[in-house]
Structure formats: C-alpha cells, structure tokens
Amino acid sequence: VTAIIATILITLLINTDGIQGSGVTTALFPPLLAAGLAALSLLAINTVLPNSIFLIFQVLSLGLLFLIIYVFVLRIFFRAYLNKIMIYFPGGQRLGRLLHL
Image 1 (cartoon, rainbow, N blue to C red):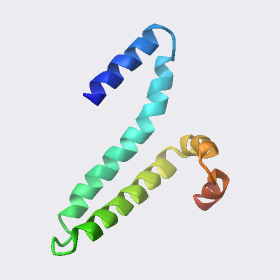
Image 2: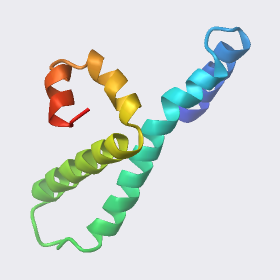
Image 3: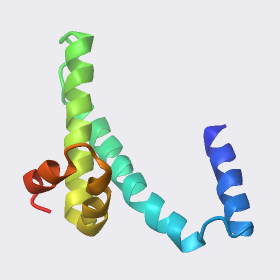
Image 4: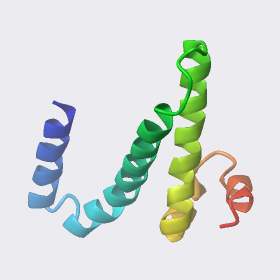
C-alpha cells in the first residue's frame, strides 16, 4: 500500500512540475540498490547462521550486517551521492572522514 501511495504521489509531483523525473531516479536508485543488495546478502548469510542463538543477538547481528553492507554499497558504487547526503547528517563531516569520502 505504501509503495502504491508513493508511486501516485511521485507521479503527481512529476506531472505538476513539483519535481523532475530525473531527480527521482537520482534520489531513489542508490538507496534502493543498496538496500536490495544488503537484503539479498542477509538472506544468504541467514542460512549459514546458527538458529540456536538468542533471537535478540540474531536480530542485532543481522541489523549490523545490513548497515555495513548498505553503507559499503553506497561507498563503493555511489561515492558522490553519499558525499552529498553526509552534509545533512549530524556529525556528517566526521562520518565522511571515517568513510574516506
């Protein structure tokens, strides 16, 4: 339902010149690709992880792995994009130096 509403709103904004179509692609493609690759990686990793560990440790470890893979994909494939959005993060300059942007 959320994807349908987002699609309708984006279409309306493009049709009324509220935003440019190329801007939507530029804004959405990098995070969607990074999230997709991270999710696929976690599906593969989850088959290897033992199911005997506590659920909280499993969730925390998978969440940390998702974050690492997500940032890694953005850093490797979309360095300029990541550099632009770091400006808006609290401590963005420090994070940028940490990621060697």
